[in-house]
Structures are given as structure tokens and as C-alpha cells.
Image (cartoon, rainbow, N blue to C red; front, side, top):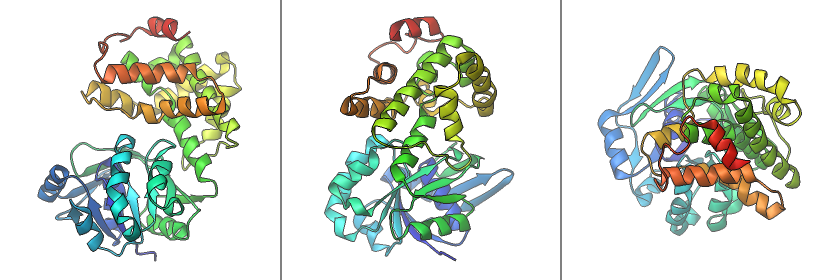
Length: 344
């Protein structure tokens, strides 16, 4: 029995899912979040929904200042589950408390959060992590497990194995990875597919994969990322419940005549009617997007390694402009030919 005690930064979908799962298995969790989020969760509690089952935790431990949060320790580890665009501010907020911090498990999407945290904290205390399970957040403090896949944790720290044991005790399907950077970049590949394009075009992934030109564009953005990975000497690894190596093979090696029907069948239909995260953010009116930390990361590393990344650059710049309302949200709406002409 691992019996972890975790401090979780951010009670969004990921933080709520992992935290509530740990609580449900008898382990201990303290949340740190903004006062408005803390008030909503304190009022209604935490709720975890898995299939037909639902469990609620009234009055979970949640703190709104770092001294209060750290005083509730000692902790085996902290888990960062904030959006990537909030990581720099969190890192600065944590800096005065560097000596008091436990090892930090970084569960965010993207490949730069560990570096951002490690630059101001102790880099050796930052543990790369990734979540492949699909989680919904219908309300503050509520997490819905939509599809169980699992969690990856880099085995680079002495506490990594205990985290895997504790997470598996909570039914989270965790496993260790020897190469944290390869794990994070492999997850990034999955985050690219039909994500930015779905938001820009206001089209579901199935329709994107069914369009020959758009499928080729999707394959091109993945190939750009794969080329960057090769320059970084990183390999593609399969993630829990996610055959990323097969995905890379599909996008890199297969001709469109073979790859496109497979993408329609396995990538498009597998999502059902759920839209990707960038679409939900843009069309929900949010004026902040993580595209700069996903497609944008491919662009930045491409510049550093001498790899051209025109598709990822266009998708990043266009979606950021749409999100900031610098160009009308209807600019490319349901106009794939216009989008393709602008890129190629």
C-alpha cells in the first residue's frame, strides 16, 4: 500500500480526477487553487463520475495561499495540473518556497512545463508525467472519466515508483517510463491531431480526416514534429492505452490512399461527437489557448534544431489570432480549401 499524501496545484479536470481518485482509495490530498475556485468546490464538494457510479467528497482540503497549503504537509509529492499558460506565473509564485517543496509531478500537456518549473526550482525535483485518459469537467469540482487509458510517470526520481503504486491503488492505470522527454513528446503528437484545425475550421475530427487535403495537412504537422523529435534524439513511445508508434507510422509512412481510411475509422470515429480541447476553448469564448504550448512548441524547437515547421506555425499563429479576436472567428469556418490555400 503506497498511501500517498499529495499536494495538487489546480483543481481543474485533471487535478479533480486524480485527486478524487486518490481520496476514493483512502489516500490524502490537499488542493491549492484560486479563491473563486476554492469557494465553489468548498460549497459543492468534489465529485468523481465513472460510468454509472458517482462519489462525492464534501469539504475537501483546499487552500488558497501557499503557506497554508505547505503547512498541511509533509507531502510525498506535489502535482501540477494547471494550464500550460499559467505555468510561468505558478513557477514564480513557488520560488520563495523552493526549499519547502516536495518533488513535483508535472501532468500538463506540452513539452516545456518541466523546463519552466525547473529553471526557477530544483530541476532534479521535477518529474515528467502525462495523462492519456479522457476526462470531462461539466462543473467546478466535478470530473467525469470518459475513457480510461492511463497515466505515464518518468522513472527519474526516487519517489516515481511510489507514485505509480499509489496511483494504481486508486485505479489510475499508471506506468513508469525510462525516458520522460520521449514520453512527453509522444503525448504531444496525439495532442496535435485534428485539434487546432478543428477549432479553426469549426469542424469535427471525423470530417477533417475524411477530407483528403486536410488529412494530408494533419499528416504534415505530425511529420514536422517527428522530424524535430529525431533531431532531439527522442523516440516515439506508446502511452497507456494509446498506440503512438502506430499513429506515427500511419502519418509518416503510409500513403494517403491507405492512411486516410484508417484515420477516418480509428481516429475520427473513436471520438464520437466530442470536440477537441482547442475547439471547446475557442468556441466557448475563452480568450486563452494552449496552442502556443503544443503546436507552438514544435515551432520553437524546430527553429532551434533547424527544422522548418510551416504547418505548425500557421496553425499556431492563426488559432492565437482567432482566440484573441484579432481576426473574425468565421475566417476559415467550414472552408477547408481556403485554409489549405493559405498554408500551402
